[in-house]
Image (tube, rainbow, N blue to C red):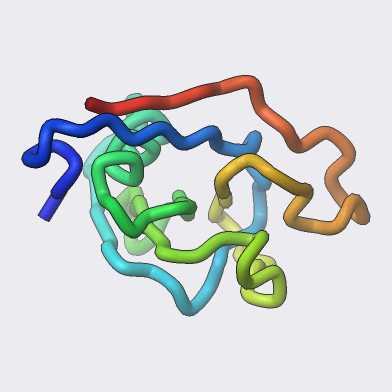
Amino acid sequence: MLSNLSSGICRRLKFTTTVDGYALKGHVIKNISFKAAIHLHSHCKNLCIMEDTCVSINIGLLKGRFLCQLSNSDHIKDPGDLENEEGFTYRGREGSNPLNNTKVSKFISNSDDQVC
């Protein structure tokens, strides 16, 4: 259930820039598949914002379909669960570098996404 939408409140999340080749494992609360990748990142971010417990997303290609995974944790709460995953991209909530500045030098995004 996308409870933010039905409750009439706004939820705001700032997402990090994309981290290609990584996914947060063990915290997926929803898998949503799409036939096409048109606006996939935007759709996935919006679905996360509408889901109260979502704080990060994994986006990838699996069995010929584009996959959006909503997660109830992120690289800040569970840094050890951010793992290499070929073909996937991770986006968490803004706040810190999920790879502890070892592989990604610029990680903060100015995007401020909100759904009411």
